Image (cartoon, rainbow, N blue to C red; front, side, top):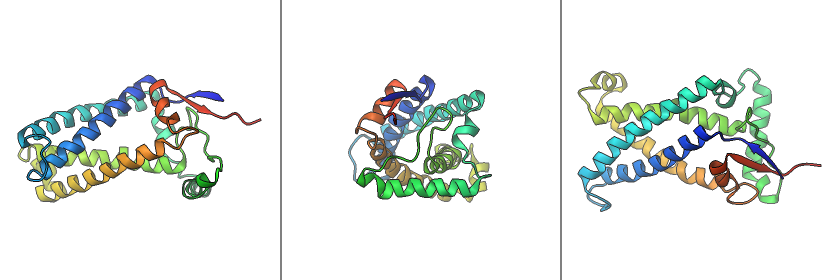
Length: 210
């Protein structure tokens, strides 16, 4: 078993702040949306927690962005090699076959992560969409709902506050599902806790091939 230092400390801190924040935002968002059916807390408390935590994760997002830009890793890790489409598509198909069937019969993961090649093709596409499109969109719609007058220009840009509310709710559903899928995929290491442990220690373990 060899160890690969895959998750630097700043990334691990950002990850766990984001994970805890997302879960609380999902729960408080549910309380706000279904105020008459849920009794987790009062509506006012849910709104306050949701708002403050939203700003904390907004700052956390820009810390993530700044870290990857200044370290020069943003392009290498998060941007798929679209300039080599055939190779990228082949690797994506291999990874999809592994997730859909190969893992059930004991095949080896076709992707071997390294500090410079952290994500497989499917992860790259997913995280590029999430970090580059969906989270910024959730931030923008969240700001509009937080203060419609202050962010009226943004509201007009996307079609009004009702559209902002619809987008924010749809993304809330998406991120709720994403948390579940993300946790499941995190259990698919050589042991169920291997990937989760790596997000605390920074080291991924991989069987050495002889």
